[in-house]
Image (cartoon, rainbow, N blue to C red; front, side):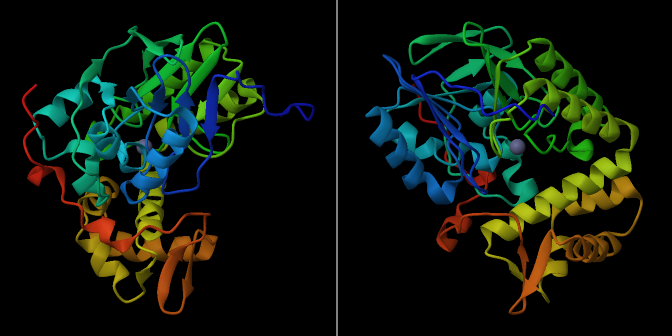
Length: 328
Ligand SMILES: [Zn+2]
């Protein structure tokens, strides 16, 4: 890490909103076609839309880096107010056919309000966001449809969950196949080769030193390739921490039954070749020991900074019961 490095300057036509969990960072591109990249968690959709309205007046286009709940939660509200939604083609097609796997919402037990994708995006597509042209860079790994966005004049790269200043995106080996970590590593290398001046991640701050951020992310991604069991544990810790954040913790005597009922936990146990009950116990125990979660007033809470979510938003139905897309 270069000790002289500081946060790189951003162009005036870009507004960056660094948000704690459970919201992904949100990016607003100003100009004749105001565009928003990612829309936060469903429990904060009003706040997301109000922020965009205050800064841009109107949003023409929403682009999703991928369909996880912390990136698409404001889509429905912004779409109702006239924004078009753009997302990677595999995700767009699944959303259109109301595939029960959409957004991994049911799999991860993370609610998403129903939306439609108007513009499917493939690698190499040029998108006008605000007044600048951005290139879509397909960067599968964290999800198969994951996208980065590249602005070559300013050398800005929106990286979604592929990496952050402190982390690399978790991979779902059970859902996406044993090669998901290798795929993520290749995507990271492709992004690093663009040599961006500014990396705009979906979580945490803007990295002060992009080459150092890529070097660290490539090392971490290589570890996920070399140690599939470690990759499964890493994903499980991230998914459980998120579940605790959106529920304001889970009662200590309910957390293991909660975990036993989760598809992701059962898949992870299968990958690790241990009983789900063993994984659930060890997951909670190791996260208590590391300080990632803590016991307070009988509930297990995540310790990472996060914003409370109105509990009623957690009852948003899963995609398998979403209404069919409206005819266009
Ligand atoms: Zn994600």
